[in-house]
Length: 119
Image (cartoon, rainbow, N blue to C red):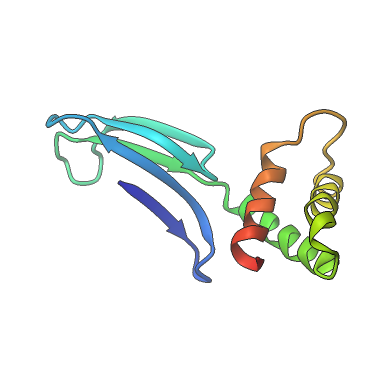
């Protein structure tokens, strides 16, 4: 099962893919998207014997990422296709102050918002 979490503007805030691997309700999270933390435990909502997964999404960071994505897209929307990605990623990294080294996951998350919302 895939649970997709959207805001009131239908922007994807996060998602996770869960697999129930037996009849006892044991869950395994197979993949996540914009999810920073997962906690496993027993059902605290319905008082069943099933396992519960709690997901945590930093809504403030998500909103900041959406703003950055919109600004970066508007800045480079007229750039040719060959240079568009590189220009966007350089601007994203500068805005979130990524130093020398590998590109951060947050930069890729902002890029994915550009892909989903603008391309």
